[in-house]
Amino acid sequence: MEIDAANGKLGVMLVGLGAVATTFIAGVENVRRGRALPIGSLSQMATIRLGKRTEKRMPKIKEFVPLADLNDLVFVAWDPIPDDAYTAAVKAGVLDQHEHLEPIKPFLQSIKPMPAVFDQYYVKRLQGTNVKRGKNKRELAEQLREDMRNFKQSAKLDRLVVVWCASTEVFLTPGPAHQSLAAFETAMEQNDQSIAPSMIYAYAALMENIPFANGAPNLTVDLPVMERLAEERHVPIGGKDFKTGQTMMKSVLAPAFKARMLGLSGWYSTNILGNRDGEVLDDPESFKTKEESKLGLLEHILQPELYPELYGKVYHKVRINYYPPRGDNKEGWDNIDIFGWLGYPMQIKVDFLCRDSILAAPIVLDLALFFDLAARAGLSGIQEWLSFYFKSPQFAQGLYAEHDLFIQQTKLKNTLRWMMGEEQITHLGIEYYEYAEK
Ligand SMILES: NC(=O)c1ccc[n+]([C@@H]2O[C@H](COP(=O)([O-])OP(=O)(O)OC[C@H]3O[C@@H](n4cnc5c(N)ncnc54)[C@H](O)[C@@H]3O)[C@@H](O)[C@H]2O)c1
Image (cartoon, rainbow, N blue to C red):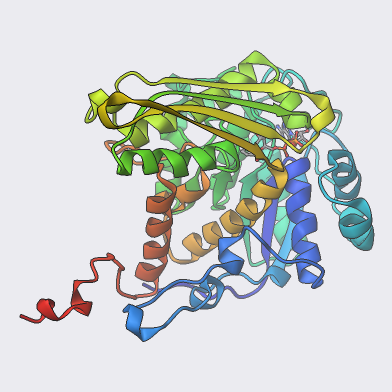
């Protein structure tokens, strides 16, 4: 496979300049200055095994595939709240101001959000003043396209990538406006309510041939019109919803139960968090979007249709409660009721005192770099190999999502091997033993 070299600069356009986006930007800048390590990022920290175990070839992923260098990343964002990245990061309260924000203050202050395409109908708990005006949604999309072109030109960039790090929008289902480009464009002109702001960004990016990754559970690029547009324009897309704390743990634990054929009768997950994301999710309509995204995976992993005795009657509940004192330091608490041999019940309790944006920031970095890689490798449409990073990974029609974190990781690494013309690793390993010769 021919992969264009990562020459020149990569513009990372972030929709939303809140907790996740500022933690990501400030993090990359601290890493670039040698002040911290990019912990949690596969693209920066992980190695990849090549060939047989006896060959001992284990390069770092970033040395194996041609990824953009961190020094070549240039950031920009849109947000309806006009705070620059420094002010937004201080307000988000994720990173230590003295340790990680003050030393890079002028850099962060130089990142001022462009006016957003924003409508409070889709995010009830937010009010913004830094908002684009236009006679209809199509005109707003044109303004976004202009922002993209201007950024590329003024910052002398080689390539662009867009990552949605903005608030979770209200729950929507795909409708007639999302089935074809003509219907979508007409709906934009008519200011149809089924066209959410996130879809306008996605449309603008695809029309500019820019890869788009969606970190929230909104539909955004998970629509027939976007999938087709991405294929037609040869642009990679992916989503939805960064897989960070509680869901990441679920996608590790549930496969373990299934691997050992242990039954599951119930899984109760609750979260308390006090950041702006928590406030937005306190609105039932935004929560519904998140809930759908968090609920789907157990059923896919456990396959109750194949194992009705083990997983036919799982009671799965997810709650998110806004609790301001906690800020970004969420507590995700899981009570898991499992059963074993002869049906005897057991319980597991997981109390994950995590930091939401600390877990999400390296995912933003990896997605930006891998989507840019995908584009340079000529891959288009849904990038299922990046399911590793998403709570509700997008998949092609006729398939189902792969949620198991370790299958996702194998898929990701095998895709990198495939891109670089290396052998796939099947873990068969029979060739190491004598009887394989006979
Ligand atoms: N942190 C995590 O672990 C995690 C995991 C999965 C998904 N997410 C999702 O990532 C998103 C960002 O999370 P966060 O903690 O940074 O939230 P945040 O509230 O701190 O930041 C979101 C920002 O998006 C802005 N925004 C809202 N609508 C916009 C629009 N139409 N255009 C541009 N900007 C807009 C808001 O003004 C805000 O500044 C949320 O949707 C969240 O659900 C986060």
